[in-house]
Figure 1: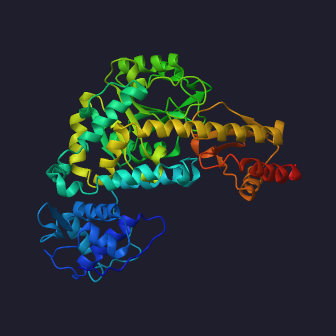
Figure 2: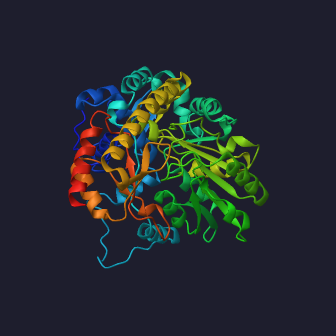
Figure 3: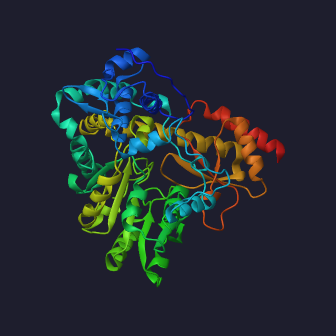
Amino acid sequence: MDLILTFKRKPGTPLYRILSEAVKQSILERKLAPGISLPSARELANQYQLSISTVIRAYEDLSSQGFVVTSPKSGTRVADKFNSQAKSATANSPGNEKTSPSFREPKLSSFGQQLLSSELLTASPQEAGISIPGANLLPTSVWQRLLSKHQNCYSHEKAIYDYSADPFGHAPLRAAIAEYLKRSRGIHCTLEQIVVTAAVRLDLVCRVLVDTGDNIAIENPCFPAARKVFLSHGAEIHPIHADDEGLNPTALFTSNNKYQMLYLSPSHQDPSGVALTLERRLGILDWSQRTDTIIFENDLDCNYYYSGTPLPAIQSLRENDTVIYSGSFWLTLGPLASSGFLVLPQRYIPAMRSLLSTVQSERPVLENYALTEFIAEGYLERYIHKQRTLFSKIRQTLIYELTLALRQLVEFKESSGMHMLLQFAPNLTEKTLLDCATEAGLTLKPTRPYYVNEYPVNEFVVPFAQLDAKTIPSIVKIFSSKLLAIC
């Protein structure tokens, strides 16, 4: 059967979400009656020239909201009765709007008010120097093959219909992650400790463990989005200075504050890229055990080191019940895999399981099947090794060309990750640097949003993962010539 839909395209909206909204609108407008069967994923994909995985994700989205139901025998059909989520959407559909005076203020919860307040105190994601691989570097051929291999997972495995039974996610994927972490980061954990989620992992942890007024220690500087999450939960932020060896724990050890949590990125301090020394890692871990302070270990960019051997994760150093380890596939695989994961101490598993039983809804089933095999068969580690070799070349080329062209006007800091930190001479203005960089096609992001209170002048993050080593000399030549002409 053909399904006539009206698509409302919005910039930045995933294709599966656009399809999901189009089907939802047809249901709300009664163009699709309750109980009617919908086309199979293959039929709808052929009709609109979409990938089967896009249609499957759209159906998953609709199912999570209660608009459709799926079964092995009857396929996908419009739900006979909407659940509470769908009823809420129906109440707000065209023709059912409840008008209210335009001057009326929203009736926000305390959390809603704190969330808006945190917007004023932190930077937007666009202001942060996030770097991900360019599309040309992604393992799309392998990924597409794995998606095709598993596209029939709905029809040939009964277990897939019980997929949502475990709020921690797809068990085979969690087992693959546990083995991967053992090999790559020295972390010994069981799949029962691993949570796979596309949600903001720090926010999930804060919902369970952070109350309004709790003292939270963060690195200073620190990734702005992390600070925003803590502020939205009403926490009291305590910035702890980070130097050339990472977070300096002296202030923690001598403080009279009772900290509920320490936010730490030991493999790649953001934005400096500095790795926390082993001595400090051990000292902080001992302190957290003595004081029962939770450590949220964000192992950001842990795979991208360019000298020496990477230090082990804090979670792996000693047996402990205070470290929550957080990792992501998005920074490595970009749009191919939206999932991230947490490794929880045993004592926090029941509370997190209860939370996710309530709020975890959307699960990219097909993506998780593909990701499981991508990890288990070693594709991920081979891909990371290839990336690291390429990024090292890009990074060295950029350093060489900038040093050659600008000499005393720029200073570099030894770092890991997919971006690097530059410090320009104080006689240059930020506007001049940004204008010249824009004209040359070089991305510079001021580090000002990363700092609480005072910040260095003319310090910038340069995301380099999407640069081509061959074009760097010409980019730097344009940038430096415009800059030197002004100087």
